[in-house]
Image (cartoon, rainbow, N blue to C red):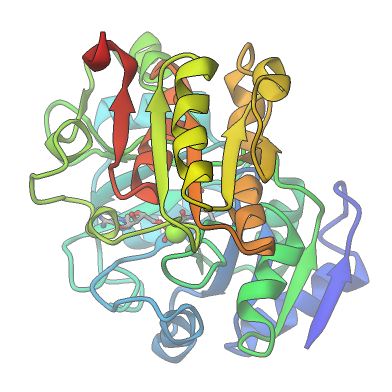
Length: 346
Ligand code: TXA
Ligand code: MG
């Protein structure tokens, strides 16, 4: 077991990266930072290595993994054809937090794709991830490096909390940055479909290729999801969470009611509103005026609620624009879709 701290601008030839790459080449699993969240990497060509990922995470075997590459030429090895709009997305957003689902060839372990005819691929924008990909010379299958069901890790210590003793090591490159996972886009249809909102927004994608739509599942959670990972409960803190869409005063009224019943209450808020609540634990996850800061701290905030015993949790709501779409998607999962809107009380 090793935790290696590396400088963000580490080279592919540095000893720590070469060591981590040697574990990957030996078929071990290693956690590493990407610009979104920490990934749990393994050689995507090896059945044994990929199975270790599912085992370490306790991940259901029908939920496929994303393949990470350092050079778009590597796509030829395991992707059949790339539609024009996908090529444009690659040119514009790679390296970056955008994953493309494309028709696959047979170059990879079938466990990566969990039996599907498609493969999800992305080129991460983190210098440490790119250095590791270059040093290993491998396509790396990597889900988020958390135990299945927990919030994704945005700090090396989150990976340690979940996976210490279950994986070969962690390359610690500090906080990840974007904080929510990549946007997953299905590129097998004439019009691309967003299967998971993430670090690149629908608006940004539309500005490059025009029409794109959300999978029905994102709009209406009762539909059967196309991205297998979207059907599992995720991100939930130990205590039940409710999202409150309204003013801080409205949210405080919920806190007060719980407190009258002797409950210990936690609240997830923002810089702007932090002084407006009275609760047992107040966690600030960024600035409402800059939703990127909220995305960056969201998962750490959700993990912090488990640091002390709390009975009930409330969160502010966020506008579903830009990265706000990904923030609300993850918060709703963490809350098991419990949301109350002030407008329904007025
Ligand atoms: O930002 C990210 O994407 C991070 C970092 C580590 O790159 N990775 C990540 O992986 O979030 P994971 O495994 O936690 O999420 C992958 C998502 C899942 O929802 C999975 O179901 C979906 O991508 N997915 C993978 N392959 C797919 C495919 N062939 N078709 C549809 N969805 C797929
Ligand atoms: Mg995940």
